[in-house]
Length: 603
Image 1 (tube, rainbow, N blue to C red):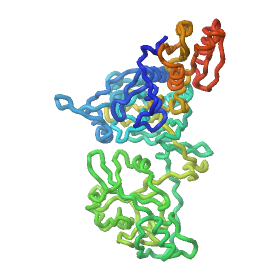
Image 2: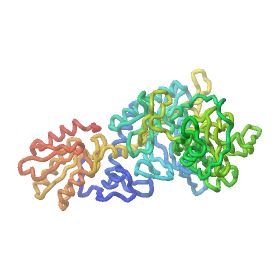
Image 3: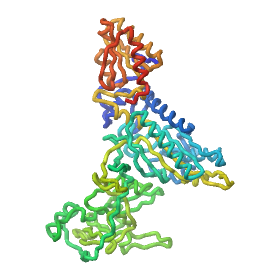
Image 4: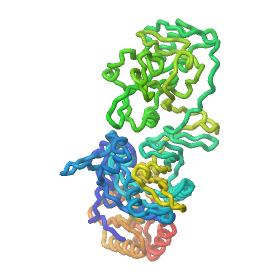
């Protein structure tokens, strides 16, 4: 395929777009690959679409290689299946919903579990039909509250989602492993470094869940790894709980005057000044921090909850949100606390919350009422003693012992993970890093099949609920991740395997011979089976053409210019900055040889 810059639909920009924060966003817009349509929504231009199709090709090849069959669903879907699985409510405001002219509810699909399940239910009824794996590459929609970073977190995005269907859990394990290995091959072919991390299932549900993260400083996900091989998204890290402590010698709790100690730092300083310990100074780790949040449950009901963590740690909102999903989490406001006068801002302690409150009552089913729930960090174990809010202005309680003086409704993973924290599996201290989520695989189990009545007859003629797996690749996000990995200060630098064109030819100079030679070589290389972009613009300076080649990022650039007088043309490798001259009479053959040797290169 040969395209000419004089009529190719592309315009480059010299300045970064005002709303762009990360390199991939800036360069994809400046180089004419995408254009912003609305916040988090982008139009694909010819260059961007070409890269997207190349990524899709690799995904399709690896899906097809494991026997996964492609289908395609609508993006606009009826609400009923999602209502049956409760995801109509669980997705909350991130779900795009609408009504048609008959006032029937519809949605723009964020994922298609329900549709795949119903399709298989409609067509299959026997264990002999299984195992089965289906996939699609489709546009998805989520009403992100804070779309950012261009294609990395958008409201409209392209995703490959696959689903496996098996008669039993052993079959699901096999299907899961096939998909997992296919994902590894996809990212290895793309040359995209990845880490497989334990993850949370979130609104998808299910048991086993792993993310494929591309390590990248601008990534939105924090993940951890240990010297012994443990890896996990920070949201999924389970804190190793200490053993209970013998609190026999801890004095009785005591309410003490602590004026102007509304922060942990102030409290520690005041405690060391007015109430010093004999054995060592007080530390932030001796304090119990209360963090009050308001949950909005899928049914719209609001609930105030007190989160207790050691005072030397901060709350990680992403971990907190993952732990409390599908409820939405916000920091409690004064209005949220108006119905709870027992909560004294800045001096709130666990004695006023959960099972410790004299307002706590229980209904016939054992559900608590009257006081807000109290959820504690796993490190707060029986026998540990704390300085906590005294539920009275300018007062704190000292020697407040868990299990003796207060209890909780449960534990929660809400505190930040720190560099050096122990890995849950005992494999050493944790290291923190950032990454872009490029794939996610789940063992869904029977959640969707049960809700939508997907059953088949087994070998004994008995009805069995099918077990499912779900496997997603963020195709458009992969493209953005590759742009983050393959660029320099001058522009993009695509690997051969996804570049929109293999060769960028420029006529750098004046005179018919330069242009005719450039055109002849470009046409011949195209005829040899390669994609070529020829910059034939007659009134554009060589400097502008060179700048555009660097910005657009094709892996090889052929310069036909001054060297033509000496019978040579220059071949540049955009990826490593090297170049060498080729004799004009051998250029076509040598270029074709080089391109063929690197056609599937991910460098």
